[in-house]
Amino acid sequence: MKKFIFFKRKTSGSIARERLKILLLSDRMNFTSDITEKIQRDLIRCISKYLDVDEKGMQIRFEPPGKNQEADSSCIKATIPVRNMKQRR
Amino acid sequence: MGEVIVVTSGKGGVGKTTTTANVGTGLARLGKKVVMIDTDIGLRNLDVVMGLENRIVYNLVDVIEGSCRIKQALIRDKKYDSLYLMPSAQTRDKNAVNPEQMKKLTEELKEEYDYILLDCPAGIEQGFLNAIAGADRALVVTTPEVSAIRDADRIIGLLESNGIRNSRLIVNRIRPDLIRRGDMMSIEDVSEILAIDLIGAVPDDENIVISTNQGTPLVGSDTPAGQAYMNISRRVTGETVPYLNLKQKKRFFGKRRKGHRK
Image (cartoon, rainbow over the protein chains, first blue to last red):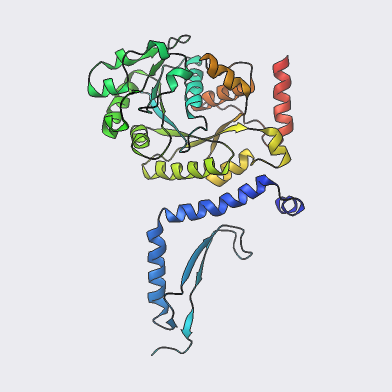
């Protein structure tokens, strides 16, 4: 129902709602921005055990629920460029 | 033993002082003993909204500094004998008070009064920390606007990290016509985004301007805002006042208006 209205006419009320959802998510995360950094550090440490990754190009983002089809809840999207697919030994 | 309730919002101008005045007066109408404290040091307003600005002798800072007794700084309302106001200081800065002192004051007032309502200053600085120090719970006021909701979200987070987890939401300045048209977020949208329970919604009502001009809160009067504030006051006391059907906004306000014309 919500989706139907959404596609029919994008009212300023629904624009406000969508903007707020994204805004608050980043606000809430910034509030504990050190957590994001810690996750990032741990991810690098974990993955670089097996693969050669580009630490500088790594990006972590939080997305609100409903932004992607797979999950109903908020999700973490990490982009980690891999330099070399060869396994480290 | 009374209860200390802080009225807060983060953003300025969303209706904290009006809400404090009306809920305070509403509780007094219900026969409760109420003290309202204006904690906005340097920018006092609650006295003017209550129409008590000419009766101020002592203020909050005088009490904190021990220059007078608590009773001396409490101004009795014009209409309700069980309603008192402790005004803020106009010529002092907000560092004249600290959270421990506020906590001690509210603890003392709790012994004698049923409700202590704290009108919180805008912002998240010292004044805010003072106001929430002694609070048992919070009423978070917001309007259905992006900026006000964003600030309210921050406030809710700060309240939680200070141990106040039972905050309730008041959505102020509702325009049913705009909501129907889709040009204003609905009450459910706001409550869902902020993830706290609603205690009431107040329609945008020109009678608020009139009542502030006159210095007489309109709670309980035959106006949309007056009825909404009375319902909120009842819910604060724990009474279950049925939530009006917010999904059918057109009917809900239409019905209410009709009722008033009778």
